[in-house]
View 1 (cartoon, helix red, strand yellow):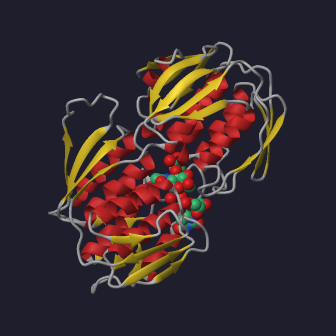
View 2: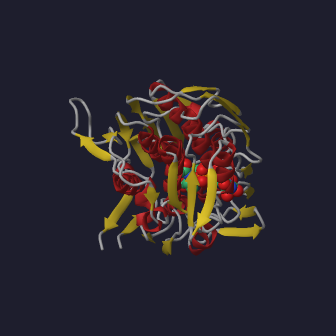
View 3: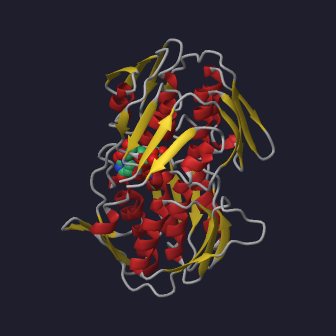
Length: 429
Ligand code: EPZ
């Protein structure tokens, strides 16, 4: 297994191009199952999760081509994928594939909506908590699906098609909102999603579905209205920038010090995390093409945060912010309100010398004057990258094991950091 070795101490200076968002690319690729025509997606990040979803879609019979680089495009422009589901041969998503990536469960919605049936393995446990799919199933049932659990599979049927309904989520769920929106796009009549997730990735998927002929209004608000249509057609769509990657590098700069332009992204995607960074002492300014982050050696102030659904502080940036707070001048409180077990990075940050106490969903972080390099490993992708951030200022060498977690969600991580002066090296197994 590959490892990443980081020698701490170098400030970051330069430009980092931000990739397309993993958490938009995955549901966007899934929408290709809703039409027999070609869906062309550009700015798709080169990530292990994208490759895995291509395999899962391929298993259903979706053809894909990766379009060659066009004039003026750099290797950092993301890739362009053409997906065509004109010949779906199988509506089953098997355990071997679904168990490796939770978002692959979402294929249940387009398969059911277009073909009237789907058999998709339950995604199973996950390192950040139990992560059930009950709300997704409730939404499909509300739309008229008959659901049965058979040998670890969710079997969904709607022989006469889905029908529009009111879906009122008892808690905000990104996966539930994606699934409800995709299914309702091809249902008969009007659907209303109440307490919908407002994440930018939901808006991106709604925009793409509308280009495909869907009639969706209100995405980005808590109430989404979908007028069902009988069929969807092909479209071209560019994946929006990755706000989690943006926030991760912004925190890396705040940690290491320096001056970095984050290109091809927008502050509108992450107001709450950028505000927390400003309060911690980083200078954050917006330009037409991105965000500039600077910090010149001053102390970091402790900042308390609670994770929350968008527009609140993203749970996917909690581990990175905690890494930053390990060096603050004082005590900060970090509350995780979305997932019940998303503090797996705490033990590993402690190996680098961090002082963190856990009390239920609260982490109490007492800043220390110095971290020291050590071998570490992490159990999910955001936790892994929090160790990268800590390692950027740790004395000596940090070896991060199980790099495949990073490869799931961060495109060209080492080269993006190295071009800004960090000492990062990948050792191939
Ligand atoms: C998405 O997961 C993201 N994944 C996650 O990013 C992100 O952390 C999460 O949203 C929250 O922002 C993708 O977009 C691929 P949820 P998702 O449904 O949709 C509970 C990363 O690192 N819940 O909004 O699965 C659930 O357990 C990943 O890129 C139910 O109880 O999250 C959680 O407590 C990790 N029943 C809360 O809702 C359900 O049926 C929010 O989950 C569904 C969810």
